[in-house]
Amino acid sequence: MNILVDSHTHSVASGHAFSTVEDLARGARERGLKAFVLTDHGPGMPGTTHPYHFSNLRVLPSSIMGVSFFGGIEANIMNTSGDIDLEPYILARLDFVMAGFHEICFEDHGREENTEALVAALQGPWVDAISHPGNPAFPIDLERVVAAAKENGKALEINDSSFRIRKGSHQNCLEIARLCVAMSCPMVCGSDAHYWEDVGRFDEVKALLDAAKAPEELVLNSSLERFQAFVEKRKAARQAAYAALPLRS
Ligand SMILES: [Zn+2]
Ligand SMILES: [Zn+2]
Image (cartoon, rainbow, N blue to C red; front, top):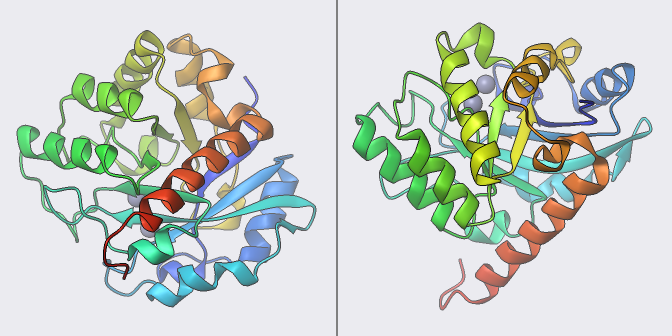
């Protein structure tokens, strides 16, 4: 399977990543990608972005160095209610909102409460996809999380960096991919690049998707059109949810 979009990349704005947006675009082009998503860490993580970073993504063009560009976030899940660290008025403007657990913002609450947090995030209107749900540092009920993603029209990420950085992710990720196939739940593929050379690095993700016999139609990044259609649908849903808020912030 070909992966043509990288839906998880970090720039220098993340504070502990080392490439500019232009570097990331060059990396995407060199790998033959059609698009990438900038998903710097949410402001809840120390030493990373200010909320203005996300409201100002609109200054960036929709194509950089010949590669389509999407402005997004990797938000932090902050509590077991599934709340994330950016205001709705900015979330409504982004192309892609991913959220996940990071130790510095959310300590492991055990399987039951970790699962509740992810299910709540998936049921709410703001989060489009969960980043690295296969991280063994945060045990979850995989079946419940995949079912919640499917039910709410959301996606789960298979993260290539996890195989190197989050030790023990492989078995969980394979199980997630198999459950996604069984339940027809969409998946997204992220390199989680913190340096430009890693943009579009999907060797292990591809092998895992093959092992799970994942069909292309469930892998949103296997076509730009498929990824774009998901982005447009989710963005419209976030904008509608924001418009319906009684007191807009
Ligand atoms: Zn990071
Ligand atoms: Zn992450």
